[in-house]
Every structure is written in structure tokens, then in C-alpha cells.
Image (cartoon, rainbow, N blue to C red; front, side, top):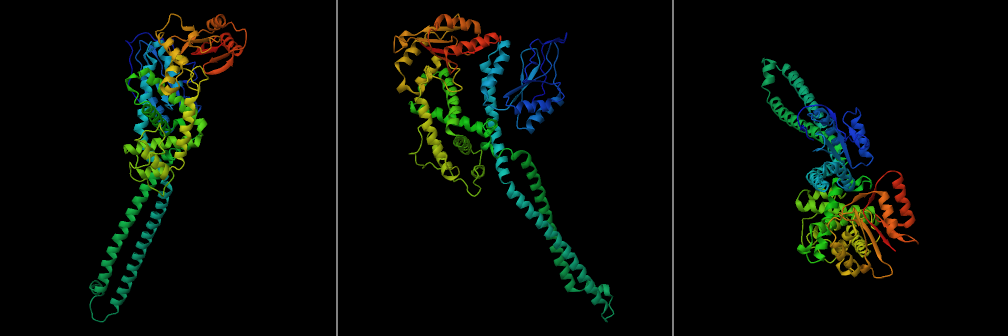
Length: 550
């Protein structure tokens, strides 16, 4: 958290910021007496980004309360969230952003874009920085989280050690009491024996000069020191173990079953998020190897497009692959990279994988590569194969099933077909470029014609969207292809009334035709009814791609 104060101009009249977002249920007021409860309720409901607005007034110095920042920071830390602050260009205040996951990128983009649209800023740039910072936090904190999780896996053993130490301490105390009793008995016996002698010497002097009693006291001193030392060490160890167990119960217990969490919450797991990003890296590198390195022909736009497609593809395939297999993939890829970096010890990985009786062997490069899927880089294969054989049984099966589904997915028509969730924000030209990148051998002449035609219209047009009849791109001249898409290649908000009128004027539906709206296949009448409902409610339709085959 940050306690910096942000200033905007000189002191002056207090004018309320007209762009207040208090009406948004995801925006919490800093004056709310139940702020912590409200924050937790919102986070538990699945909100990806919560904006905590401080009072923002123009021409007035705005300062955050350190006590409030401490409250929010403590609240977030206790519940596995984190607190970030960022400058808010409007007004002069600032917002605290509580991000529960890096995976809810689309909702983050919606919120960041809505805030930056009025500022005239670059939402994509800020969002990229936000996402990068979030992944950076994940890597920095992951090692500590895994250490705590592995330590929590040792908690039962530590409790057993604590019981043993306490028993040893009790034995040491009993031994000291027994020694004291023996010493008292010996002194009494020696005193009685000294008093019964007839040599005239004082009993005390005879007692002190008794060699046997002196030897006994020497032994008694040594034994007492040894027992006291053992007792002190036992108590110290027991105290340390008690403190560690207290830490485990509050922090480590919630981190151990990361990969077993429910689907609705597993995105909040740093380990799962990290494994997802590493799997994306492997798929991306595997695609580059498959295409002979890619070269400099891949533009930054195509690379970003590939990443977004891979992310959406993995999200869809996770449900088709099955949660158990996909979780095994995430865990394996996360541990593979962390083991390679030395951030996790082999015994920690074995504990996290539930194999307390096994330790992972040292890294070796002689793993058989016959089973390596094409999309898994060679450098990652030895450790992944080792994980599968030693501590993650079923991982190879997961890799094979994933590869089979991945290839099947790439074999599906992407251009002008119902898009999987997450891909419906791509324009036609972006889908074509993606199709060409991922499946060059199956890139049809139709898609090539689409790309050639659309690449000449990359500059934003005068109208907010463009409608083109691509007769030359259609394999059947009797079925001309009609495309409606934003001209700027970015999601846009269009007036529903104008969209409906334009569609009616261009399509003139006289019979049933197939309409793709944002990746959802509907008949024409349903699409028009959806447009009309949106228009009647006074809303705006988020239209990024409509493709109709007449």
C-alpha cells in the first residue's frame, strides 16, 4: 500500500467531482463504516477489481488517512488479497485497486477502459502495465507461498515432534526431581552415619570429608547441569515449534491445496496463475518451433493476438480436458519452472505433490524424448517427464490428452465460425491472421482473400463500422459473404438503433440466414429482437463482429 498524497492544483473552492462512480456497486466509499465487510463481500462475489474511491474534489489537496490505508491493507492481507494504489487523473484524488486475480483480464479491461476513456488515456497501455505488475507480484511471492505450503504439509510431523519434546521435557523435570530426592537421601544417610562414629571429630567435618559423598555430589552436579540444559533446549524447541504451528494455521493451511481449489476460486491461486502463464509460454514456444522459428515476420500485433488466442483456447480446453487433468498440467508447469529456477527445493515439490516419502531426483537431460508432445519445448521436457514419473502420475496422460484436444481445436474452422469463449472480441481479419499463424498448411484461399482484402483497410474508416460484400472471397458466387465489423479493429460501442437500421438496409432478410454476433450463433430474427431489446432499454450494444452468410 502507499501513503503518498496526490495533489491537484492549488487550494480553492470545494467542487464535487461530477464523474463520481458512487453509483457503481463495485465502487466502495472510503467513509463506509463497514468498509472491510463490504470489501470482503464484493471480493467473495467474484469481483475481479474493486475500486475504493476516496473523496475527490477539484482544486483541493487530497490526503488519504494512514489509518484507513492500514485497515484496507490488513484486511486484504488477512484474506489473501493485495492492495495497490494508482493515480487517478480525474479530479485529483486516487483510487485503491484490490485485484483478486490476474486471470479476470477482461473485467479489468472493462473497468480500466471505462475510467481511461474520459481521461483520454491509453487503456491498453495501462492495462498491460497492470497485468505485468500482477504477474511480477506472483513470481516474487510464489516462492514464499510454496515454502509456507510445504511447511504446512509438515505440520502433522511438527505436532508429533512437539509432543515428543514435551514428553522429553517432562522426563527431564522428573529426572531433576529424582536427583534432588537422591541427594537428600544420601545427605540424611551420611549425616546419620557421621553422628554414630566414636572418633570424636565433629559430625559436620566428617560429613564434608566423606569421599563417597563428595563423589556423589560431583556426579549430582554434572547430571543436574545436563538435565537442566536438556530441559532448556526442549522448552526452546517446543516454543519455536508452537510459534511455527501458529503461523501454519493462519497462513500455510490455506495455501497447501491450491491446485485442488474449486473452479470459481482457483484463478485466485498464485500457483495456478503462474502455471497457466508457463503453459502459455510452452504452447507459444512450441508453435514457434513448429513453424521454424517464426522469424521477424510476426508483428507485435500478431504476437498479442496469438497470446490472446492461446489464453482463450486454454480456458476452453480446461473444461473439455477435465479439471483433474488440467490442474495436473498447471501444477506441473509451475513446479517445472520453479525447480529450474531453484526457487523450490525438490523435497518441497515432493511435499506439494503429496509424496512425502519421495524426493525428486536431480535434473538430468537423458529423458526419452519419444513421448514429448510437439508443443512442449525440449528444455522443459526432462523436468516434466521426471515430475510425471516420480511425483505426478497421470501427467503424461494429461499431456497427451491436451495435445489431442489442442490439435483438434486447431483443426476446427476459426474464420467465420462460432468462436469459443474469449475469442468473440477478435475481428475477422484478426481471426484470419491467427488462422494463418497457427495452421498455415490449412490456410484456405478464402481466408487468404479475406486477409488480402482486409489488410488494405486497416486504417480507421470515417464511419464507426464497415460493411463489405466480398464476392471474390466467397467460394460460391451465389452465396456472397457479408461482414460487419468495427473499422478500427478494437471493440467499439455502437448505437443499437443505427446498427439495426444498417443491418435491415443491407441484409433485407427474406428468408432464414445464419448470423454470428460476438461468437454466438443465432437466427436473424433473434438477432434483431436482441438489438431491439437493447435499444428499447436505452443501452448500447457491444458489437465487435457480425458475420452473416446469405
